[in-house]
Length: 111
Image (cartoon, rainbow, N blue to C red):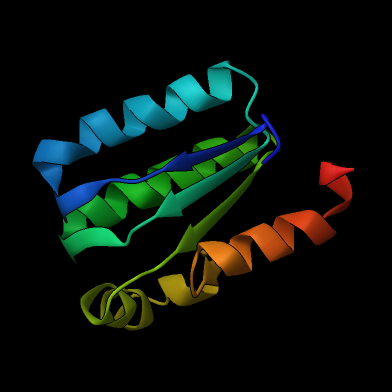
């Protein structure tokens, strides 16, 4: 995969206790030249309002840097949270990492 692509895989519960570490990972990725960021939530069991806020903050930062961000492998709880808050219209959510790899392979930025 392209070195300008970074995959971040938080685990457990994405809440206020993990939010700072999560944001720091994204900051580091952007500082080191990442153009495309994938947040793979396959190991996340629950996201609370603080975790959702961290995701939104990260998305704003990525967009401000004119980079791309995708989210994949969300469970039913996260999907419901995204739908209830209309975040499913804000984030580009992909079913899994394979779908992400296919999407990035078709992207003009990856050429």
